[in-house]
Structures are given as structure tokens and as C-alpha cells.
Amino acid sequence: DTAVSQTPKYLVTQMGNDKSIKCEQNLGHDTMYWYKQDSKKFLKIMFSYNNKELIINETVPNRFSPKSPDKAHLNLHINSLELGDSAVYFCASSYRPGAEQYFGPGTRLTVT
Amino acid sequence: AQSVTQPDIHITVSEGASLELRCNYSYGATPYLFWYVQSPGQGLQLLLKYFSGDTLVQGIKGFEAEFKRSQSSFNLRKPSVHWSDAAEYFCAVGAGSGNTPLVFGKGTRLSVIA
Image (tube, rainbow over all chains, first blue to last red; front, side, top):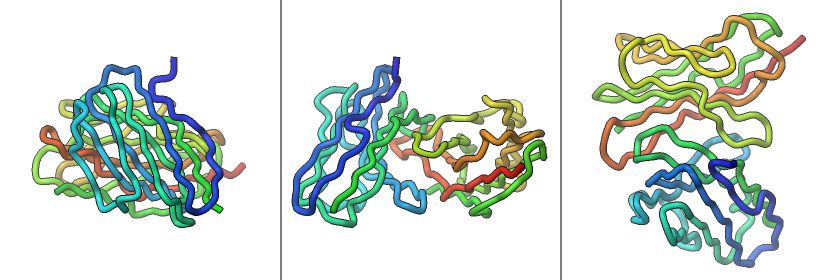
């Protein structure tokens, strides 16, 4: 069983479109995260939810909106996609903030 | 707030040679320390972690790391590198409590040559 899964794995879309990435974890963790990894492999945290409550909201354009329908799911919706949004987006989870995180396989987003 | 520095952006080693990847952290209390590996096209996989106790921790894939409080370091080592170890390695530091998530270093890319 995959611990943290993301869909889709690849996403190619045009500028201006709206897209969503879904994440699910079956580890029973309370905390989930979204990261953006750029071409230089730098990991930037975007959002974190703990027990469905938003606890981390870094400096991210408000075109990005996370949604956590329950503790096992954290989705990321992106409006009006721009070229600079092209990156790999990782979902992760942990049993509490500050504990070890378990990562999904990533979603490679390409905006053309 | 905690921070992590990985001084080496890219390291190349020969297959069979030993490896040490450096990690320095900044944190006022006892840190929670982690090493992750990211193979090409994959997500990050936890190699090992340190919370307390024995300062030499063993991880998966034959890796180990040593916590040295006096040097604020948590260096990753492997006695004999395999070609499959070529990947990006990330050090991370976490707090023992609160809502602060892990802080990741910028990563060290490991290349392995024959």
C-alpha cells in the first residue's frame, strides 16, 4: 500500500488554466503539507494542515488554495496558472508538526 | 527559528569509496535531525533520524549519521558507495514541539563514478 499518494503524477497545461492536485495518506497522520521543488531541487514549504486546520501559510500567491476535506486528504488548487508555477509539487504527512515527514511521489506541473 | 546548511552543493565519489555529506544546523534546543534521499524522479525517502540517545544512528541502505552537539553537525556517512546511491540528499531539522515544520537544507547532489 502506498503511504502517501498524489494524482496526477504529470500535469501539462496552458497558462491561464485552473488545475488541482490531490493527495491522500493512509498513515493515520494528523499533519499534511504541500511543498514546491524548483529546478535547483530547492524545497519550499507552501502550506501545512494539522487536524484539518491551516497552520502554515507561507508567502504563496493567493492563486494557490489548499483544501483539507479530512485528515487523510489535502488537495491543492491553482487558479490562473503562470509559467513560473512549473515545478514539482510534493505532498507530505507527519504524525505531528516537527516530526519526520513522509513524502508522496510528486506531481510534475508544466505550464506552457 | 531553526536553520540547516549543507555546505556542499555537489559531490562526486568513486564506486566503493567512502562518503561523508555535511550538515550543520542552528537551533536553540535539542534538535530533531533527519536525512532524506531523493532519487531522480522520485519523492523524498527518510534515511534516518535522531531524536535523543546514542549520537550515532543507523539508517537504511547502509547509511549512518553522527550527531555532534559541540559542532552543531549531523553528517551522513557510508563506508562504501554503490552506483545506485547517486541521488540528492537533504538534511532537515525539526523542533520537539509546536507547529513549526521541518526545515530542509538546500540539498547535496551525489554523483558516483565507476
